[in-house]
Length: 216
Figure (cartoon, rainbow, N blue to C red):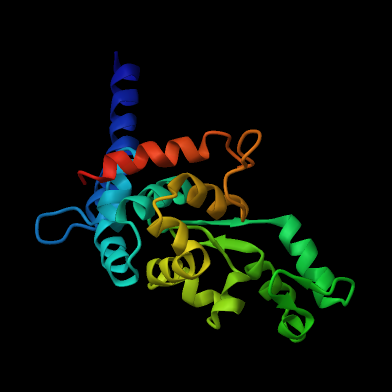
């Protein structure tokens, strides 16, 4: 009996501090009685709405791009998480290194002159996708901005700016199937055969997510 009592006391001494720390972490984002969106718990659709609906709606109106599409894209690319996270692409890194070393003339709009003084870390950042729409770092070169811009506090605005410039015409034409496929592959949906996206259901998921955000 004494041994069991000592075990219970030990468990209380160990578990109670952990519960206190956990409770603080859940509520440290609390402001004015509401949980900060960064600490929102729920499925990806609810999470995206809590974290990004306001900023995405503002940029959607500014650039005349579908709010529902952008919100669905946010769910597809980062799961609505804030911070959005990043994804390093070894294949892109390899090609950019070839451009830097003069073994390749260009990679999309990136030429050797753009990488002449770039460190290896800088090239890796260019080879990584950032922000709620997971915009590739090297896209900043064509936009005449920096990687820190597309991954910083204004990531939503810069992401929507790129989308508008790159394939906004598809969105205004209501070609959302093509738009989702283009964002993921750089090509519109194939006229023959299935999608070329990394997830075969990427486009169909995006279209269904748009339906959700028509009411949110």
